[in-house]
Length: 475
Ligand SMILES: *Cc1c(COP(=O)(O)O)cnc(C)c1O
Image (cartoon, rainbow, N blue to C red; front, side, top):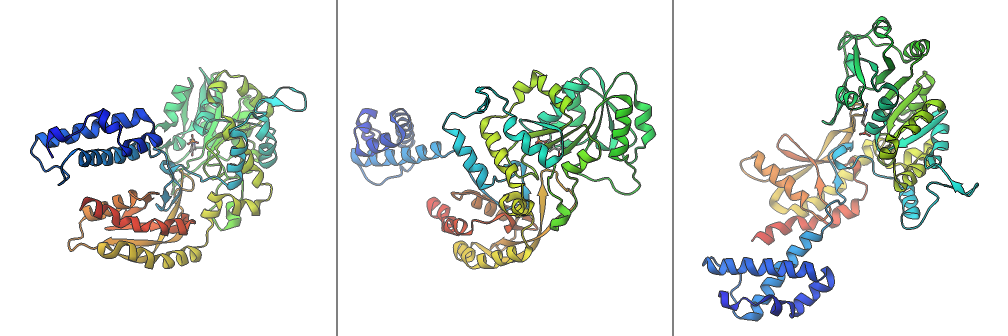
């Protein structure tokens, strides 16, 4: 093919191929894509490099350009945010969207998403209402708190509490609780951003009641306890109980705030999971305010929940920052539907995917792994060797950092003579190019797919044959 044979844009746009593309993607996108593809072909023709065609003539050039444009348009219009298979073994994976929503939450979102709703409208009184009303009744019922409000996420909840009660004042926190959660959320920095002064007490491993007591002065705005959700201090340690801190705060007239982070509503120990403090326990132990996430152990949408004493919640809601931190109707719909599932805690364990996956029996996961060996081997051919391996899942999102859950997975080892780490990286990358990308973890030269979170087995198997495709395409 020569440069002279590359048709003009006008000529390209008249072709049947271009008309099909325009019907799908719209004229502007197609013009751009055809122009780019034609320019690329022109460059190739000039450089004497082999042009990807042995044919000649206009018609052939049109086909080549239209195909390149179609591929480019397909790439451009694949949604950037899309579902993946989370086979990392970390159930609540922050980078992979944390909790999958229950079906009931999805229906609730759909119901209010495309129509008007009573988001801030009281149907009883025919006048302006409060968006928190859609979830407050469930939250107070389930946590035992007097009142509750919801903001964008738990970081926002902590920020709002500090800004409301401790701006230009001091916050007493144990030195052992100055957590960093995922890079940008570091307690000392959050305090500074909220205009509060951090007053650390105790040492890294030990803090005593007298440390808190002697730190109190006229500037004290609140006493705070932070759940050390992603690490644990063990050995020679001492902490002060929540009841004692609550009593001390009450004596000096400041709020006692407990940032629980994950904040579960069910007693984990009763379901064979490691113990995690519940929101109810924190309220019972005397916290004036408790903050926790909606999309960690609760298993709902991203949200930050603040539950506690009614007069404090009222003050929070008067802070102009709440307007900037508030949640939208989709979040409230999903949260309300998720909370309603907790009315029956047995049902919650099954209907809320996060809880169902965390309590999934290892034997069931193993059976799933065994059933997948053959289809996986068939799909991979001679690319890799596959077997079933026991592994350990993590809860994730900083919840229960030390404990792991026994699980099973597929171990996939690249079939190369030198077992290079490059080969297993390539294999992992290969799985990420699937229509619904598969994300595993690399361990000792193998790609491990922990099957705890794989429930949609048919979908998973159906796309495996595409694993061979990249080899064909590049050939
Ligand atoms: C996760 C966590 C946060 C932040 O919550 P997000 O919902 O991620 O904003 C704050 N405090 C603690 C203790 C946490 O575990």
